[in-house]
Image (cartoon, rainbow, N blue to C red; front, side, top):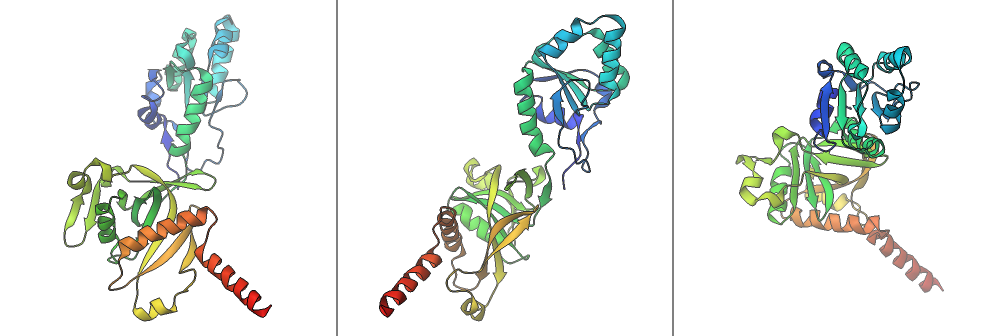
Length: 313
């Protein structure tokens, strides 16, 4: 589920990247930029006094027009701008604005911000950053890691060995993103990005050892801040009989849906004598080949079919 985004949160998150300065309407910090139940994705646009964008951008052309309007006409335009209750108004390119805009922002508690960026790149940058801030989110139980450049989620029941496996993968040079509660956000039609909640950053819980700070133990290089989810490894406790019943050609493959997006899933039985870290690395290598169009099981089936046809001939 997506989170509510307020003007205060947006300013705190983006003021450095977008060079924002809060110049009026500071009482409006709790005004919503986007409500979680809001369906309209059109949040940002140049002010045209017709479409009530949640974030109104006043660029050079708009401010030049307003600065050339006098008297009642200017007052009417500014009232129309603030009567639509925008989440915030941003003055682009540090352009000077009529004093009535500052008064209207303070009187209506509408955040009025200024930036050195021009209107067009400002709108593009805001749309990019807001895509992550307002996107739908879901927290999934598991350990999220980067293995050979691919984002993989180690899933499974409690005490199945996810954290111990993650620790072994870290010792083999792979990187931890989040333990226990990785948060996934939809950043594209078929793309999910996983991150770690701030409170859990750098920590890994291993039964018998407790909480470990892997950054302090192994260095900064073992931590990755975010990665796109490409593969889910579902660990299950299994016996030798279960292994014999598994599909010998393609393995235990399925699709799991996170935020409505299908992600390839491999069910990997946990059994004595199995080197899970090596199996994870091989699973990732195989997945990379499959994304390029090569599947070993299909290749073997094709060879067998060709051999049968040649024998019959």
